[in-house]
Length: 457
Image (cartoon, rainbow, N blue to C red; front, side, top):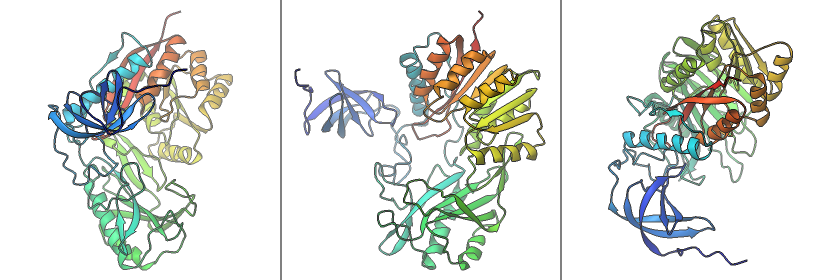
């Protein structure tokens, strides 16, 4: 077998034209068909690249000089953007970001799913694509004896100390800085993950954009915490309704532990998406951009095309957000989710909204849905909103066997969406249209909702 030889060499400089973006926002250029991935480069740009690493099928490079800039290149407004790993596309205008995300979705559906003749609508973006995140989860460290708090540097666990994050709600930034200062004054030590010593691991702030209520969660290694800090934290803002301590004693990258202690105030804060109210606890899953969540869920509701007589199954229902939207127009909705706490939240939220035509079950969708089917439940519409890995193969098989009139697929990963659309198409469904929604401006992530209908036999 002949040894593979790349047409480029490490540490050499090449003049290239960038053609595309990777899923994590790096520019893609090719030398004799061999791809080089370069952070900070945009499609259409021409420049010199120094090769930093060569693998068998691709290489990485560093941008040395730009000869021609993209029309979409802008100066990132965030002072720590080049080091922070939170955003990937601040150097690209918002118009350019929306175009790039549309291409990401259309390419995935065509190349991975090989789905033809489907309408992919332009991405629904935000009028104001800044300050949209309603939850801050900020790791805490120490530098020269003082607490620092910020996001991790790209591809590392080095914390970049941060005064503000331009995609966070302003109140979240303000509270994080005040809490850091209070804990610093009272000598609360930061957790050191290498030595597994110290106390304060993360500062979390949750904010209800409609209710104006804020919750602070202090994630600590142990239960020890100076009680005098509670009064000082209460006085940061009248919007603070809840202070919670979450204890995570484990040597892990998982942020939250199993035990939560209410230090002051209410166990929940409230918020709304459209007409639906939600009670949010420290550990509740709740979309971080409610403005665009409403856009996404209204589109899902439109694609479900309900007239009030349908039975709907919501797989991967979480805390019932989509289920409760659907219940406004459906005869009955069944929601299933593997996380017990999420189902408890879903039932609470149904009660909060006096919605009675819903049932929620804990379990794996691919097991619970066939059981429902065996008891006589017949779904006219099935809605899925799976994690990034996409739908379980057994669930897709169940959907194909159940033959609902429509499937609404909500996805946070265009690649696994495309893969699953192919399976559903082969199983007797047709993808009618696809609507991308920009839930996370200035990052490479894009949400997508697709409508499928059962082909006539």
